[in-house]
Amino acid sequence: MAEKYVVRLTAEEREELTALTSKGQAPAAKIRHAQVLLKADADGPNWPDARIADAFSIHLNTVAGIRKRWVCQGLEAALNRPPQAHPSRGSKLDGAGEARLLALSCSEPPPGQARWSLRLLADRVVELGIVERFSHESVRRVLKKTNSSPICVSRGSFRPSRTASSWPGWKIYSILNCLPPDRRVPLIGRDEQPVQLIQETRSPLPALPGHPPRMDYEYERNGTATVFLFTEPLQGHRQVHVRERRTATDWAEEIQHLLEVEYPEADRIRRVCDHLNTHKLGSLHEAFPPDTARRLAQRLGDSLHPQARPWAQYRRTGTQRPHPAMPGSSDSQSGDLASGNPGVGNPAQHRAEAG
Image (cartoon, rainbow, N blue to C red; front, side, top):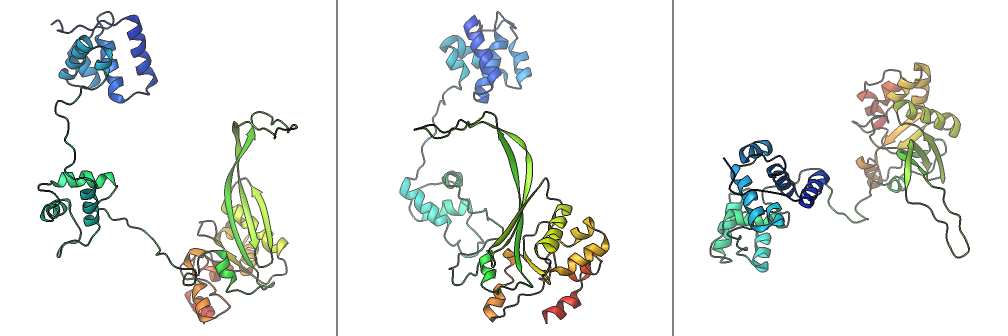
């Protein structure tokens, strides 16, 4: 059956629609309408409406509407959605009313309710005389504008704000206030950071009289590396090494260098590090023979994790020496690791050391 509205594109219109569909930068609905017009072109594919609707998974009425708007109103009207016959009405609440609704959603819920619901908020808005009628869907739209929700609860770890006097902090300087300098048992902070290596694609231009040196903004990747940092803030010493990766073997080799080259005369070393899975004494057994791993493990002392703040209790009690190892930390198993049995803890040894 012949179509009532025939689409016949000019060469310029066909070129414009082809460019619109190939670039993919326009809204999806506009691209779909352009594809429909190209397939409905009488001087081109000349597909019937049923085939177009089946190919693009749209309704027959949508195809007929695009044809009609192209014939009656032109190309722009066919590419864009038709205006709504009944524009949506604005919100019944003004700015002050929306502010009262937001404040109400942040207040305590009614007795017997765990939290506010959209329907409870809608009923309370009417009871307070803010508006005569209000639906729960209108409440949802108002709350959505401010990313508010009475039913969503953010769950996770958080810490209340505290003053500097009541919050010892989890930075390394909090540990320094508790531990006196000791060359036989130094306190070492260590961490690693992966970095991206880049190189210039064009040679920088040197500085000239009246002109600073110039460098091109473009660069290209030249691999990656890992920066290992060891610092002893009580003595003002730091050591930086660069490696290709940050595996357990790399960490073990850095520890070996720290113990045998940097601190050969130290009895043991206290470390401040995070909970990365390679920061454990078992990495020594993966990298070295058992004898070497045990010898290095025996010289590795406490492993302090800043987030756990084990030094806070010693600051309160006035004790200068921190806990040997926190239960549950990566080095709480150091007793058996040092004896050559990685992965098995010794609670009795921890209790003896803690006592």
